[in-house]
Image 1 (cartoon, helix red, strand yellow):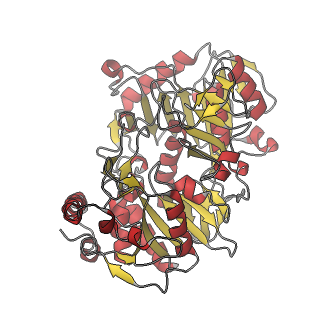
Image 2 (image 1 turned 90 degrees about the vertical axis):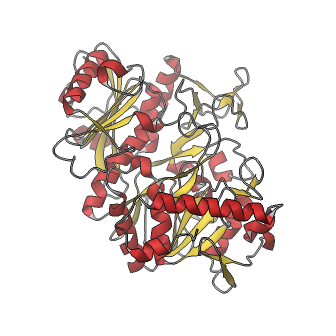
Image 3 (image 1 turned 180 degrees about the vertical axis):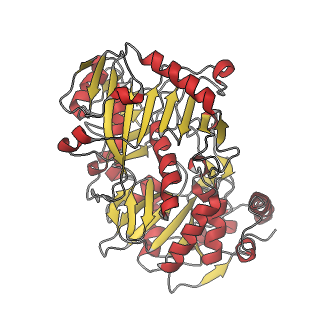
Length: 531
């Protein structure tokens, strides 16, 4: 076995059962990984220096191909069901041995990194992959140790990633050729059959969602930023609802765009980079993200002219889920250390495909718990395999695909922390107005930014509010820089009666979904919509 880098760890790959491989590239830096990716014909260089890659058949996450091994150390804690599918421990060992056999004779890329920016809470991880650009992705997305730290790095969790190794549904009992299997007892993740790099990122997120709540640290699917006065805002939401776009605000400092923990001394980023959707990306609407598209950035499935190497962010011929992965210091004025104080404001970003919910509403404590557990939003095109247009869905805690523990664990922690720190909580509709998807239009990013700015600056504290007759939430009747009619979604529909019918239909969906939480306090149940 030949070592080919100057930053190896004394904790060798043989500790993972990997033997008889060809070259092992240890902790290569950005330039070297870009060179390797181009030399291996994995990618090409765009006119601005960003690396352009294709992920093949899988252009989004494959949530139905994710499994958790049912083993003694974790099986009593896991929220088993449609999200967390059990995988047999003996079958995992068989698949693992086949996986190791496949890696023999391969070139491998190793990155020793941390999950968690907080210096006292970060978890050492290792990502081993057969693709140079996947190694670069891991390096840009997670927290990078100093040069002297890699020699003594011992991973607590290891991710083995081999996109060209396909599972056999008949033999391995996977659902398809793709699989993402987490073994909490072995502290190991196997990823195969998919080149979508987001699976690496989200498998680590699932690990932290398992570990941190058991230490009374709330793990959150949210972005975070900080104002000039030190005020912190969190933005919860599924992919495509605006977490990255709204948190990348030139007037505020970005802590992180997707995953955070909330501990007893404040919030901290789980990552060291960003993974931004870039369909229709423009320098006018998202200047900070646009400026981050440069050397060291990875562009997944973005269309590019093969001759000029100019990219086209409006081209969705590969997928609408085009992505840019880059380190957080590519964002101007970012909080590179990744830690901040306790939040002052929380925004639930709800992409309402029905066009019913108001663009912003104030939530009381019980409503905060109700709508957090509900996690109502829309899956947007391309973010998951098979999703081709917005689909209304309920994703509890705004992150159900990544929650190994029961939702009540996360909800309890959120309730305790928002009460203790007197956090202002809001619901923000980043979806449709004037009718449902296909009839109305999506709310403009300029209006959403103005509404959030008004909430952050206290401009919504003194304005009159009305109570929504169906959902019970408090809606401001005016806001600076916002046309008044936008604040009342019913007035934007051509037929108010159609709005009432759809509102009742959506209310019934909420009530039906919430029936999965029979043991929730009755005050929280009563905080939901009235059918």
